[in-house]
Length: 294
Image 1 (cartoon, rainbow, N blue to C red):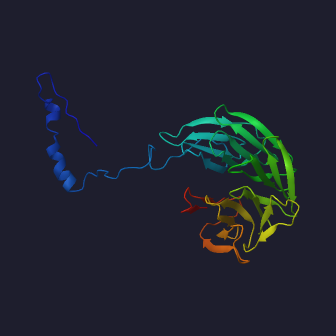
Image 2 (cartoon, rainbow, N blue to C red):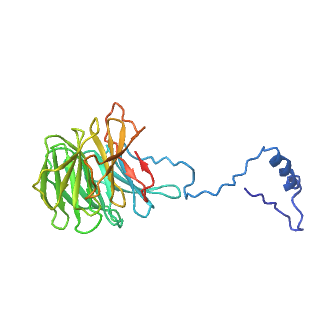
């Protein structure tokens, strides 16, 4: 907070303003009648909380860009909105093309592309700069609940849907290169750090672990949750898997390839609850794996 005194041509303060000098502020400050903010804000937001308005339906998905400067959100209104994170958080782009609700969105590791899946049974690849859809991947016969891309190496994409399939796509050729089948709906999917395994969270309370090198082999099964698994995320170091379930728990699993012991569940955390809507609530690790959000 700063005060400025306007001075006339003769260098004297205007008579009307002269009675308000800095001396009057001292007692007020001492009596704590005026609060001066001394904390240096670490955010570029104009306020501590910014309300982003624009979607015409429920918002089901959201993810920050790798550089932290943009936010992509997907909604029941079939659109993907792009927002600036700093300043007034303007909506600078809308991606249209899905014919039903957008259920999950992810950025490419370098921020040059955006991926989405929808209840219209498709997965799309977008250019966030131009707003154009680059690819549309069709193959699922029911709602596509989740998708994720590989972090490095071959540009793979994995998707899971209500048709009980987990599909592996090679983005270089725009087609599905393998389908893993299951008798129950797949609600969440993810690659491990090296894209050698696929994790699929299912309606039957289990996580299926598919080996990319032995695609026709039976999957390893992670058991422990008491209800459907709605969110999966692999830690940045690739050692741990976080799962969110409708049993109102988040579990951390040791997914190192050669970890000993049959029970890979390391920790059970309670507090993240699902309500009667039974939405697909996700879980995410922080940048340095120090925190989890659910």
